[in-house]
Image (cartoon, rainbow, N blue to C red; front, side, top):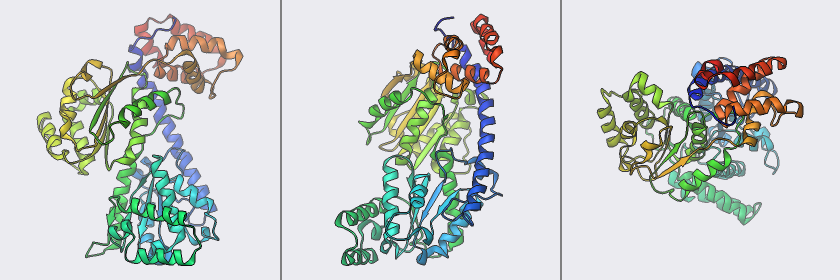
Length: 483
């Protein structure tokens, strides 16, 4: 059965993959909780070492980060200004919601060297929250943290959501008032060179221009309630900020770079790109990576998964409700039919710069329901579509089309090996069986993943029998065998 593969396998294999993914997530959640207990044991109450509540809410556990991120939120603040008041309210609220939060403390601010734990705390967080108070700019440590946050944002690793506690955003952005006074003091002391001072000012200008939370303008400053509102918003942000990906990615970098290059030339324009290919070939994985890279540049993001199947079970209007709810931050929205949903999207999104990932569209009516025309969305919006049906992308609204191809032999061998042997390549003694497996899969990533995981679970002496069984099965029956 040499290098061919029938798409019927892809739909079937999803069942096996989903089962395995949910099992893996359960293991990850238990592992994450155990790690949190160890961090608390090392770090007193978890301050500056990442806290996670043992009685975290179910929702909080749903936001569990991948192993790449040790924390979800980094709080930067000047202790004498807000440490015992608002910052403490916010830290407690985040912790109670099950959000792993890094809160620095004075122990880490010893001498001139930027503490390694602070640096790691920022790098390993999904969202950084600088709390701008009157004395924030007088603290070199706060300014050093801010520079690192901006650096991480540029690399696409995290978002910055500032809180303007008792200063106006303009004071931060333009370094006027108390912030100007603070910099005169830094310059007078001559402890930092001009380049460092310039970096600090540039960071303040950049973050001061970001749309954040303005407590400064609130006439009735109920700080506890405000902290709860911030927590709700952060929780919502975390649920959509980063789409989880497999740890066993192979051969996607070049494809992602090619698509990013297509988008890069049109960063200020609304742009719609369609990614197409057979089922199980990796379209959604590639689209998720692109979504993650772009999401730091957007306040309003939405990922609608498995539209083809969901629309059959629940109707397109159900997905339109989710899209409107995610972008407009509404708990519920009344939509009685698809036309009504389409009209709401058209009316409410025209002034919003959005990032949308529409996964597995099947018909032109799906495109009409979600992205009828480019001017439905604010300037600079990016819409990513994945589909098995290339024909639906041949419409004026789709700016670029990208076809995802099957894996070559070397990539297939590597992906299979990651799932079957938990290593990049098989040993010489396993090469014959591995080659048989990749021939059955025909370069389809989902098939390689499923077959590799299947063989990993059975004894080695039974591999030949299982492979022969798959080789002899008629293509239309491969699905049930893999399930």
